[in-house]
Image 1 (cartoon, rainbow, N blue to C red):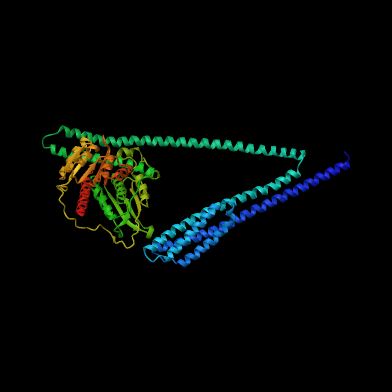
Image 2: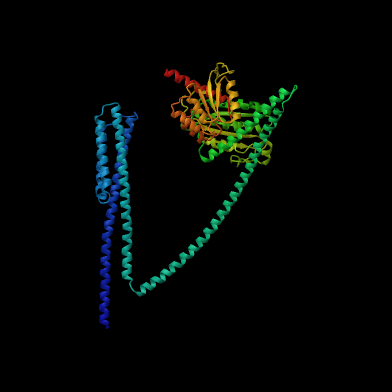
Length: 620
């Protein structure tokens, strides 16, 4: 081929390359303009939808203000708002016509219903009709807002599609021009060399990063293994401690039970009987406290422990706690004292049961770790409005604690050291539970201590609204009429559904001593048969939950389905919140747990017998 033809072919090749580059550039430019127009339209429509949503929300607030009695809804203003929403929504026709005609039609229908709802409000007279119209209008506006929100989501998707198209089209001209301009073996060879060089460095970096990740993961696994070993050791020590704490009172209970079984005679027989009963009761209460601590900790860890917000007197709670522990304090020659420097609200909104539980634990610990001296509970009030809180400071002059112990004092299963457990006892759960309860009550629990100088625990709890609540520095003394406690339930008939012979004998003794007339049955089926008899005129039914033949929940549900209105009080050893909910859902009126609290049992029976008498009197 001559030089002339080579020049001609070179010229033609260059011309073809130039024409191809121009055509490619023009094609992709048109694509870019189309994608940009799509993004611009979608953005404009999104802004219009957002303006419409804001207008709908403002209109809803005006409607809600009249419904709540905080203002008057002006229908004329509502029409202006609705016209604005319709005007803004009209901007959706372009972007959404091609992508989602159905969604646009739904929006139009919702706007039409909202317009009719506005006219209904205008036509409705003042009163319940207007409230109903406002309620319907609120629903219609909610549907409009949902339709607008769905349209906004679809518009965002359209915009994102356009942006992605822009990104793709933006990259394609460069790639096309590069391939056209750099066509040829030399260019491909250079590209291959460049590609190979670019692959080596990333692979080396990836390999180094992989090695680093392996090392980091190995270190994490080692740390996790060490933490698991430490946790296992802690739990093992805790189980050993719990075993000790349960076996110690059980030893006393069994030992003194043997003494009672052996009987006795002589001048010391009465004293031995009294001491044995007191010892058995004290150690049984200690075991119940340990079980309650374990249940509370499990609920807290599962996030299922709930607190109440009811009106109660904080000073009365403190007096109750000090009265409960005064005997124990006297035995250790410790003086209990409460101090109220400034008047505090007579009533606050909190959970008195959980507040009493925390204070009992703090004061009991202060007594336990004091040999003589004084334990002071200082009550104060701080803050205002939502930030108002009660502060309880429990101070003792006991052995104190070093800083290393304070750092882990509120962790579960922790005590100062092994010697503390041996000398003073305890499971190591009390303070951990107390801090979590304090935080559930809207406050916190902190401690300060020094070896040999005693300890101070500061408990804070939220009070709720206390504006206008009277203040006091002591519990008001109110006269309480004397009640006949010899036979407080005289004339009450109780059906006891219990399968345990020992529990049957105990309940018979407690209830008959209180004046009740009782009848015993051993399972739920016998309870159904007895309640179906014409002569069944019981005031209260005590229902165990776990029994042979038929359990208590099934029996309770069957009684309620038959129309039985006799109060049913569950009495069960299942003490979890789920058990309580199941019993109440089945139709039980009250929920009591075992071990049996005699005072609480009698009070519950008296309460529901009184309610039943009131219901019967009202229906006759």
